[in-house]
Length: 172
Image (cartoon, rainbow, N blue to C red; front, side, top):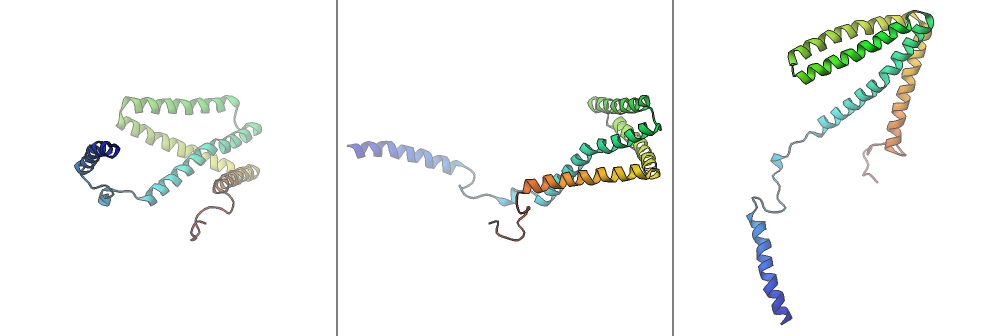
């Protein structure tokens, strides 16, 4: 009697499960690999590039501040001029954000091009200033070297003991 009840319950359940499996477009276990597209090398390259850019962005202010402190100490710039430059950077950011929110792609592209030219000229003037002062150039180089060491140190820490990568082995 007990087996008869199991059969009465089991048969409809098995029929229900098999009907849902056959009703699908593909047979379970088969995958059409032609639909799968992923270039791992491009993704890895983009990740590394974004990581480098984030590192540059995070450390750009440190070198700039080092140069500005030197200029301030030597009397080549006043605190008011530094405050004005900082306010100008903030104003540029707000202006670009407003153009993005307005959706005016042409005006945004034109303003970005103008700002790039202005920043390139300012960057060149800063390079000339740094190159004209040997002690500042040495301090900037030291700052950059330390930033690189910190970045490489974090990378080594992430990889754990023995560095990273498979190095051709089987991962054991």
